[in-house]
Image (cartoon, rainbow, N blue to C red; front, side):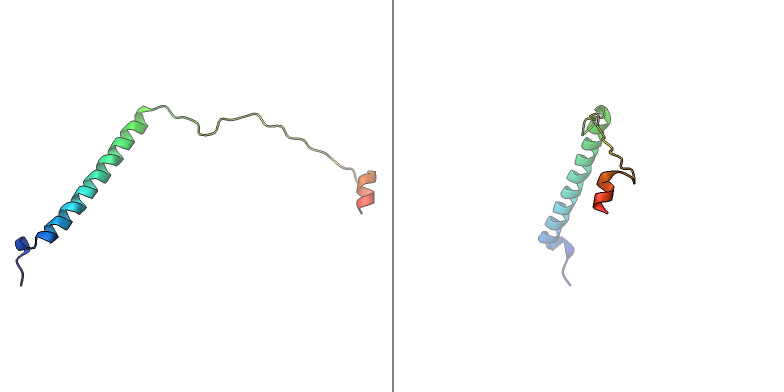
Length: 67
C-alpha cells in the first residue's frame, strides 16, 4: 500500500481544487459587495407606448365582403 505523503500529484490536485474553490468564493463575495453598493439601474428604459384599436361592426361593409 502506498504512503499518501509520497504521492505528490495527489497533493497537487487537492491544492489546485482548493485554490479554485477559494477563487470562486472570493469572486462571489466581491461581486456581492459591489452589487450591494451600487444603485439599481434599469436594463431597458421605459418608453411610452401607443396602441391603436380598430373596431368593426357586424353591419360594416368590410365584414360583409369578407364573409
